[in-house]
Amino acid sequence: MQEKKNKAAIQKRLARLGGQIRGVSRMVEEDRYCVDVLMQTAAVRSALKVVERLLIEDHANHCMEAAILSGDADEQRTKFREMVALLEKARD
Image (cartoon, one colour):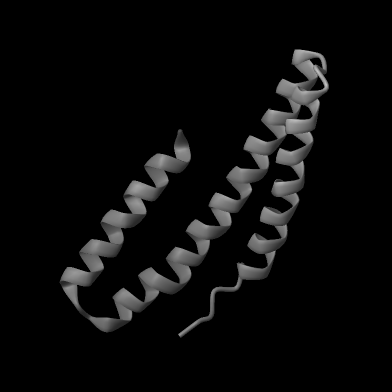
């Protein structure tokens, strides 16, 4: 079974995102120009989408692969449905 290879990258990105969120909060606190704040929120959204893609990749490479290798048709269907739901949410 493959270990989730993106874990370290995900944790690093989430730590960076935490800093970005604190920065946006400071900008609001300091009454910074709205467009500047919105530019930063767009950057946060973009960075979070990268985290989502890495998580989806790990789910496919780890969880779905395990279901495929198990030969359990019910588990395979469940993991497939989960992936479809994840992709739908990630699209929004």
